[in-house]
Image (cartoon, rainbow, N blue to C red):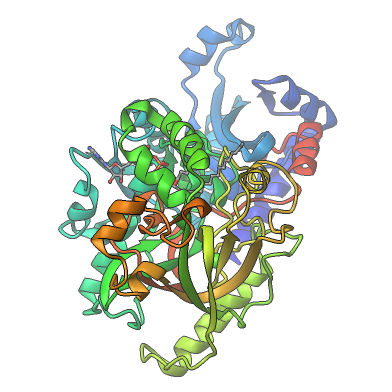
Length: 533
Ligand SMILES: Nc1ncnc2c1ncn2[C@@H]1O[C@H](COP(=O)(O)OP(=O)(O)OP(=O)(O)O)[C@@H](O)[C@H]1O
Ligand SMILES: CCCCCCCCCCCCC/C=C/[C@@H](O)[C@H](CO)NC(=O)CCCCC
Ligand SMILES: [Ca+2]
């Protein structure tokens, strides 16, 4: 109510100012001049980055026009300018005035408005200097740090020296000091920070992560991702673009996006959490091969992807899963998860009700299990669409960020040509599930055991292995690999092929707002009427 009142006062003052043409406004870009001519300017306070008294000496040096005018006072409003393809930029507008007191009143009033927004003030930043093209440090220093400083955000910056450095540090640091954690790197770096935060949360609450049925404690400290990796799938799927400045602005505005996290166990031992892709077969093999070629940077995935495609290995095993009946959506839906998604909101309500009903007590889940046996080229479980620059719609375009479910995609044995057709659909608009050899299910938990493990390795004798290499003894020409594949868990390999997976609805939060809808329309409106105060 206070903010509405202040806003109304401000708009009244603004209208008065505009109608008296009393204020002189200097716009930096052409679109803004156009807007000024139309006399209509809005910026939602939620999209103001900062307000600062303007250094007049600097401005006058830059703009000869104002040199002759004496005794002017000015303040600059920095705000989010939304460009195309979900890209955000920091833009600014300077307001000039002859009355120093009035100018200060404006600065004060706008700063008070910004104080009413719940935004991060103190952040813990981890930079992986070796992720992606090894640009993490430069990206942070040149593109992100100046914006944080403009928004008066204090930071403790930690440049990692080894893998798991950030994760280990998160178990020691005084976490309550911070309003959020930022990771500069790729999906692997994000995964490290997420494991640190979720792990720390469970440890502090006495929850045993090794128990696959343990009700995990939600992690309320948000994570911000500054993309500087090779795939940057989590950033792309939650923001709509992989762009460091856009992500920094989402962090500054204090956006919040809940995220489903799946836990992966083997024999009552915790292995990992996953938020994007948990893939066996094709994506597991690509990752395993690409790890040896890290020196190639992001190109390693193209090289290993091509090699793995040619090898065309399929793997035999059994998948059992519990369908997600609590959620309204289906993986074949035409609509995708967007900012304020009603399906994710409904899951949030269900979660709150569930918590009220049984607190931290876990209800034994007796829902039915479906069992599928077969030979698979790929088994992909995705908690989100997995959109990324290589696959702009992702592996499951209708997957939801926070509905408490994952999409389980089973690609059965097929010809190389058919598998290529399937892969090509990762990159275009066509329906990826419209193939006789592809099945997709929305699930809340699943288990996988390879045939090799089922048979308990008893009938695979050393003689057999020697004689037929690692391929199927009965049908050596069928490309069915009797060795196991590897699970690709958000870009890291798992040691075990038999796993048990459970989706934890909205276990954590990001500094993001999901992908915004109707962006084209918003942009064209904005260029007609620049959104200023
Ligand atoms: N200083 C470091 N030295 C070596 N490895 C590190 C260091 N800091 C972090 N790591 C590890 O590097 C791995 C990969 O990093 P990151 O995810 O940033 O880049 P990427 O693999 O190129 O990108 P993507 O995950 O998007 O494909 C992470 O799993 C992380 O644990
Ligand atoms: C003929 C054209 C065929 C082209 C097919 C391209 C398909 C690209 C789909 C990419 C899907 C990425 C899913 C996200 C996985 C991340 O958790 C993980 C860590 O960053 N990245 C990879 O495993 C990296 C996986 C990269 C595989 C190439
Ligand atoms: Ca989901």
